[in-house]
Length: 245
Image 1 (cartoon, rainbow, N blue to C red):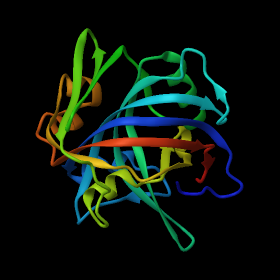
Image 2: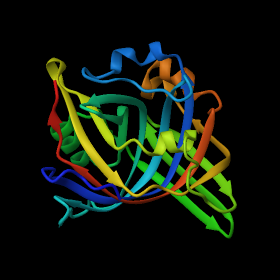
Image 3: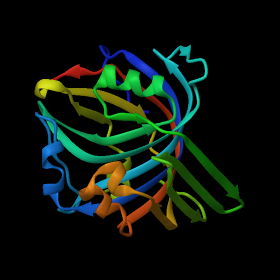
Image 4: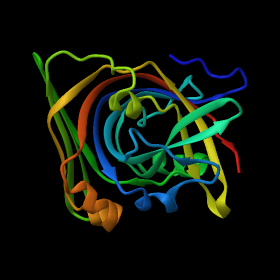
């Protein structure tokens, strides 16, 4: 696990497990209005990506020590893209969330208050099936009486992402950025061990993408992903954010 700077304080610790990651190449113009000040769009091989990610939040603890009654284990689905920020001689690679969906209102309220993230609450359910070498993960959420579905299926033995691969680019962004009111940008650090991944044999999104994410993103999600994989996940720590602009 990457070691945080000494001054950083843990906001929460948890495990992120059974991650399904669908990755779509997009026109950078679709994202420019969402890029927080002080950051710039990141790219891989000259291409810009958004990712639809579903996973399980497990054993969640505030400040790294306090279990949260009735809120320790839950699902999350998020739509995100990738940015970078130069900090001195260090290039920080991070993510920006278009929308994050969770099943409990208190979780959404706290995330909006602390980080300014675009969390919303919707009923959710998941199905995880590991049968020998086959691995299937599905996440569903109800939006205006219709169920949306994110799924991935893989087989075989997982492996660490190759150095310089798209899988490494997608999974190893260790900073988060959000744009708060009046143009302020909040930066926060996330640490976790590198994940093992399976390349998905089948994967996709079904549902009212336009209604959930807007017409531009909905059109993207209705197509086939340019890549898709399942990650095993790991323990994570999310640190307190700080305003950078």
